[in-house]
Image (cartoon, rainbow over all chains, first blue to last red; front, side, top):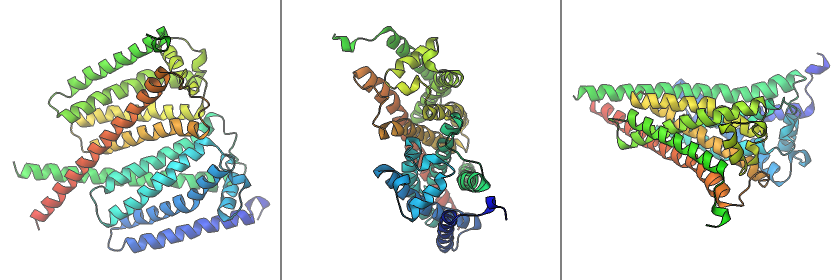
Length: 206
Length: 206
């Protein structure tokens, strides 16, 4: 296989860590989702993974960025962000827009994901309020992560090889567009059902 | 009255323009809101004003920022943004984070406000889906407008006098935190009511 297809040690370690979080998210989601429908089981798997990534990976990123910067930090998670930083340098040197998005992602999105897991399992009335709020935040966060960079002709993005371009930038951010979009669609349909039930039960009693 | 309390011509003109948009929003909202409850009439007034500001003021801001910059532009709206730029310089010289927020504010929030007006007047099932989405976007936009600046110790903000500090920065941004917050609360309560009706009607047929 050509050199460009080889994974370095840092890349391998980082991807392994992501895979481990995905496995943990799946296990947790499946366990919490027993007795739920397929769509909600899928939502629970995603939300468990989502919360794990926000707290276990992005939390330390915010901490490292506020006390210094990732470039001068050591450790497993710092090395993961240094690896990702090869595709987008803003994640290695303090970028106020990225750090602002990440503070909200960790504090708000992470908490919303946990509350939403609870709301799905316990079938709470506020489930779709939280689901819409979380998904809009995730999508807005993706917009703010890339638009400022694109408006200045992407000086910090490195799309020179498939790993950085398609796996790091496209896949790992695209997932956080696709799945929140699907969950928004689920909420839209659910609100429609609730509204139709409400109007039909009102008609019965007129 | 001391010099610091005097309004310059630009400030006067800008505030007059804002007042005119508010008057237009009120007139439109009251007209569309005939027959609606007080809360929804209030929501309609806000949404009309919101849409007017997004399209009539922020739309030209985005255009001027993308074709050049506000500092080198002329006209009524350019002078309004130059006046506001005295409190926050990022609005006069191209700041990618501000322009990114404003592109989404004009295109998405402006459109959502119009659809939401329609959904309220026609009592559509997707009313609260749109309301939650719009309000979360407005709040996220406020966060991204100020957090990156605060993280870098606000080099662009001028809070040296009451006009810039309390009217331009605090009031004109605070309104876009307070009212979306109230509308989110309204949606929360509405979803709760819908859920309770749904569960009670299910119990009746068991």
